[in-house]
Image 1 (tube, rainbow, N blue to C red):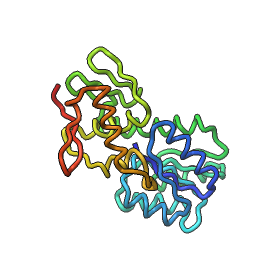
Image 2: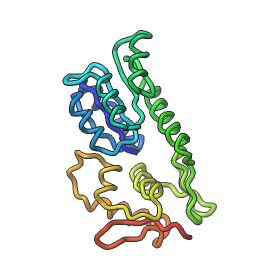
Image 3: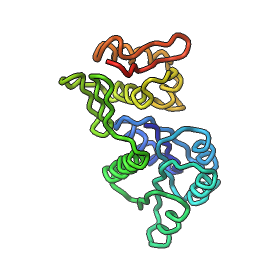
Image 4: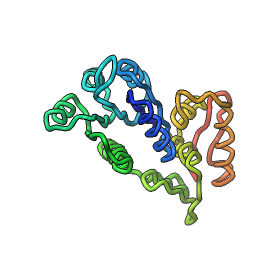
Length: 222
């Protein structure tokens, strides 16, 4: 899952990004309302965490502009304000949830997971994906091969999850990098090959096929 944080308090934004990355999400961060609107419009995100008091454009206007353009990405609004009017205005512009600072990080993560689950249920999706003898529970973050549970690291699970959600399709290396790491990643792009190789070793060699010059495909048959 790929998240965008639009927050001008840089220390808070960095703290949230580190925590959510540790939870297994790919996280991008911007500190300005106009850049946030551009990034959310151009990127493919599963959720946006949007502060209200931002330079450039405030969160209300960013949210309203995204909804007016037809973007249905879940939006969790953050604000130092507190009051029914502020919450009503945020929800009226199209936000899905609202969190007042200061807030507990545990509560924020719970809200993020709830919004992502709600989006999946609304789309008719199940958190459990079965492909032959492979079962991936994206909510519990557990993987089974036959009757045996396979232990994966956070990044290994995220790579597998992205392939599972597009099972049968060819997924490019750059697409995996974009969704599992983030837009600021400037390391070796061959890191994807390393993780795919590890997944093949832990699961089954023929499960993830390499499509030469195009990317990888999770086979849907056992």
